[in-house]
Length: 362
Image (cartoon, rainbow, N blue to C red; front, side, top):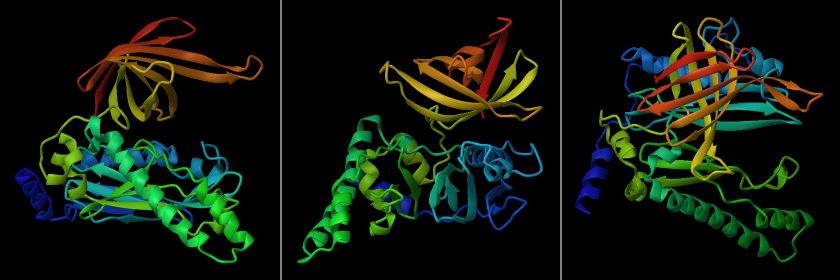
């Protein structure tokens, strides 16, 4: 108990403003539809470069300094968005000193346009994206998810009580009741949005309504606030160091990391792990998606991989053959991870020639 009190007081006693030399400006060219954050950090430019690379590749599918207009893919619908994605504004939140949290607001369109809000959290000591899973002890992840789910269910339940108390409910109210009774609440740390505050984490779960029912959804997104103090017993060693203001760096998971290295010892490449998730067919392995690019031409190439223990297997597809109904591979990677390094081979599918692959975490 004594340690718990001391830790909380240590967090509370910190200056929660970001370092004074961390600044955010608008990524040029700024326009009505694109107001996007660009970070500068005079005390550590490498950290700023990592954050900007993550933001631009992840959100815009644009490798920094690869062209005049970083918003081209988002605007012309040639990326993963069905029609377009706009970014209207951003906000820098007040957080503990080791953390940079940026909120973004925009609009995306698939079958219909819809506004969105999202938050990106970064470790200012390393420039790494902060994964929610890394903040908690592995044995506590399900417990924390249960706390979040319980609070969401209570929020919905309380509102349902209010709706059902109406003496002569309208058809609209009946539709609301049906919508909230069927609401999905089983959110996990892997898929939930969240952001840091001065003394609490806020988890943001998706709303109960689809687009057609949104006008009926008075609750909208579920913002679940939990104080650092209430979460303290679940923190991982990484989270404790992060929140206490410590300079101690503790290694975190593979997901959302950037790696730099060479193919064949002479072709510089950068790799960005975009997603890591449990493989359905093998509980002892995880699947992941990644993007990589040759530093010379800066064109994004998709990797689909699997990691089991320290071994990594990756397929690099060339194109989709409509007639054959399948992807045609370009290359295969077999590699092993040791600490922050990945070593292995990149094999051309046509020539069967093997080239060395050496990567190191940025």
